Length: 258
Image 1 (cartoon, rainbow, N blue to C red):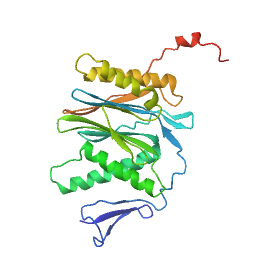
Image 2 (cartoon, helix red, strand yellow):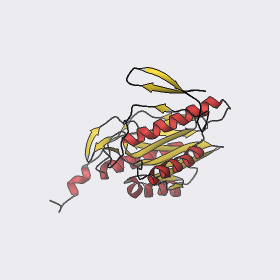
Image 3 (cartoon, one colour):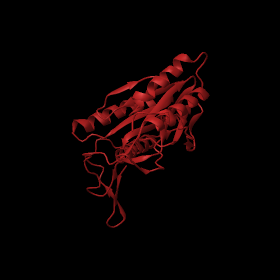
Image 4 (cartoon, helix red, strand yellow):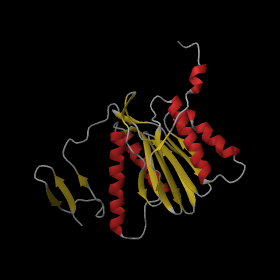
């Protein structure tokens, strides 16, 4: 099988020799030279990602904002990425690095599909691979400035894990990145602990919506618009954009900070 190289100069596809390749099934996507630069400081950033397991799957939530510092510059950045019918991922941090991670994962999916062996990338496999990818970039002193949330449905059970920009990772029943790990994570854990019966999909969506509203109130970098993605044995479902109405009546009772 031959590699394909796309040249921006003559808009032609060129085939490279299969010699000196480590993996004959690996697909390489070549782009214009110097298209990537080292990320010395994130430019367009994204806010918190929340995730929680329920009785028959996993749900994650993220807003659709892109920020220049504290400026809400972009208001339609949908960053929940469907990897396949059983796996999704989402990141917080630099949006350009998220696009690079997404391109890298897509290359891997193409390589897996070429094999035609009937296997697809599992959430746990993607999670493990992301730890290597993030640690590898960190070791080159050129980290990807993201925290990656991987969710999926593997072998009859939900999977939920987080990988940070250094390759540090953990799995849990509920996870959060950014300021959400300080504000929303206790509320997610409390929702699971205080549920009297089985913690179902509707309960998961309710607590995620409340936590996204809480982040809108407390986090200066969080839009009142978000999406919720759900993974079960039936596949992946990503909701349309949900808008927080907001209630600022409590502001009238705040005194002494003028």
